[in-house]
Length: 294
Image 1: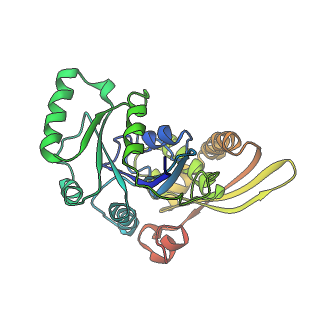
Image 2: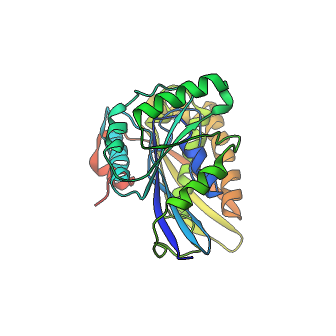
């Protein structure tokens, strides 16, 4: 049997479980996960390799209507993902309606690329309701292969993988077979910190923060990581730090423990907080933070 390889791009609205699904399919926790919308800001690739195939998964930000340049950049990642896929995974769930951000569904309908429609979170509904949802999507995307699933409960993820491998085109691998992702380790360090911010703070604070790794140095016995948390307002700096530094210490402790598990080594983590009130609308800052590519 000849070798198969291809790009499988995961698209969908916020909070439908795209990141959970990719992590499950790849078998590694590459994308951060929280209950808040817009957690994913970058396009993150995860590779699955066997002797017979290579699947290059891409997790993308949830589809939204941009209100500032950061979100415009996030949607550029999505738009690029619509143009370079060999297989699409369009993820919806049992809660959202089939007409949400319908313009992206219409764009997919016009492509010749195979589409697998994943109806996620089926553990949260009934069989009768699920059948209604399936019929709605058969009308919206008649050419799509529909697979009900629960990424969280690992239901039908094996069916999804089997369907993907059958759709992959023949070809050599795009990346070395021992490679897991296209992102460097320091990227995942910053994402781990950002996830802890989303989990520990409410309202607009997580959406106004960005994490930059300033140094990432491996010593003989541990990894030394220094990071800056940027916020949009002075008042948010106080919230991030907390009374006598308690909130920042909690974030740092949680992030350090997860970094140690991810990196497989001891970590010394330093966190600093700075104010940059215009970073979400400043092209230079967005470029420095990796949201705008040359």
